[in-house]
Image 1 (tube, rainbow, N blue to C red):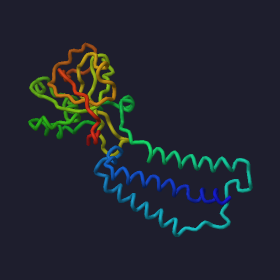
Image 2 (image 1 turned 90 degrees about the horizontal axis):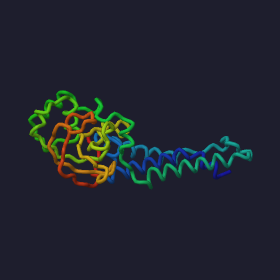
Image 3 (image 1 turned 135 degrees about the vertical axis):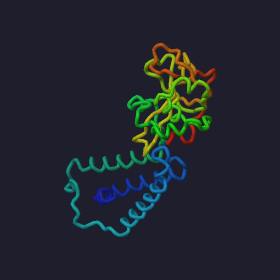
Length: 251
């Protein structure tokens, strides 16, 4: 049973190697931001290198006990199942972390979380500091926070938003209104919260599929929709399809 003994001994190490290689690869290729906040990049890379050193040390220093107990090593008929399961876990981890390209969060996640929920808002002081600033640099999060915190129609009357995000429907009037949305990451993708600006554009589904990325430059108006729960919306004359940016999240 040499193979099974070796597999049992090093299964954890092999899984660790897959995770380490995936982390370093994402960091080198600038894709670590799809999973964690940039403030943790250096920490994560340092910890990955430390983990790699520990795995190497384990291979070099740890020896298997000759009398190590083996699962069903007496030739039990289910012994092959443990080995097959271990191999499947290792292969699945390798494919999931190293072969498949990392994917960003989409409308499927928006449906499970509170779009423009309070946890994604700027604080009141942060929102107040935006007033009188350079509105051309405002992100989706900036505008959505001002909308949520009750800035009135007079405030938005002479403002123009230039934003990029993915398309996700307004559940209260999906035929006429969608949100140009992004995810706000505070720590990692697990805690990402969706934010968005409502856009009035009847028949948008015919031109812009859900989860496609668009750029919009538009002023704000009172929402013409009688069904939507959003009071103020963007009413663009044109919407420009675009590619997903290298950094799709906001922080």
